[in-house]
Each structure stands twice: as structure tokens, then as C-alpha cells.
Length: 212
Image (cartoon, rainbow, N blue to C red; front, side, top):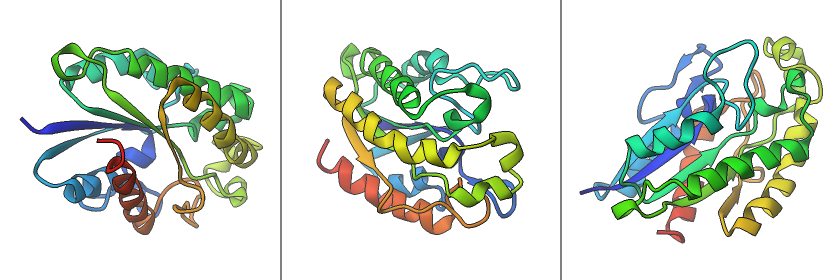
């Protein structure tokens, strides 16, 4: 049986291409590249959903609250060894009224739920890796996404990772900060381009080698 990893995230895990407004193909998305890097011993499951939040119900769209979905999601892919969570970009939206610290609290709460879901081998608990997504570029406000995102998303996404690292390390959860290694695109400043997906896959691969 292959060793299974679930990559649980938002549009940057789903593979949204801001240039075409469609989905990057397999072999371009970071989670699929990660599977290639890990080789035949592993199966990487891509669980990305555009607009997904960590713990918040979005009043405009259905089914985006990760906290309500992660348990059945992980159980459906059991047995698995590792859950990789990369969320937080959508939580910065102005309509949610969350501070950077609140966003980190939500992701940490979600991480704890994943750590306590018996989706590991023989009903054990899987390991969890939390990734802080690259910060949103301040130029986003002048793009098409600016109206729906609202103000100060860049500031919150910049501040959030330091709080998130503190909170997940208290849980004993693995943490990865992408800021210095993976940039957002220069179209809407909040999604990865092809190069960003490749860089993220390599960054995560090197981290996984220290975990599994």
C-alpha cells in the first residue's frame, strides 16, 4: 500500500491560474509535483478548494468552512501518514473582520482537529504539517480581486505567520513558512504562478524528508 499524504488547502492547492482563470494542469500544481518528487512509494491527494477558510462560514458562498469538512475528508482518504494544511489567504477578507492573530487561531484550531482525527494507520493519528502561505502583495487592492477581498488583506497575511508558528509549535505541530522562498504572482498578487508552484513543491518536499 502506498504511503498517503493529503494536501488540504484553498485555490493555491487547487491550482488556480490567475492568467487564464482556469486550473493549472497536473504536473504544474505544487501538490502533483510533490507527488512526482516523492516517487512511487507515495500517493499525494490534492484537496484544494477555492475560497476555503479555516473556521469561518462565508455568507456569500457555500461549503467553504474547513473545520466542518476536514474530519470526513481525512477519514475518506484513510489510512494516511501526513496532512499538509495551507490556509489563511481567504481568512484575511475584510467581510470576516478577523485580526491576523484570529486567523492564526483558526488555523491552529483546524490543525488540532486534524491531529486528533483517527485517519492514520490502524486508526492512529496522522502527522500534520502547517504551511503559512506566501503573503498577499499590497498591489492586490488595485486588481480585480480587490473589491471582493476588501482592505488590509496584505497586512494581515504578512503578520499572521509569526502568530501561527507560535500556536502550532505549542501543539508540537510541524510548521513551514513560505515567505522567503515562494512568491505570489504579479497578476492578482495572491495566487501562485507556475514557478511559485514548482518552488513550493520543492520546499515542501525538503521539509517532508525531515518528518517521514
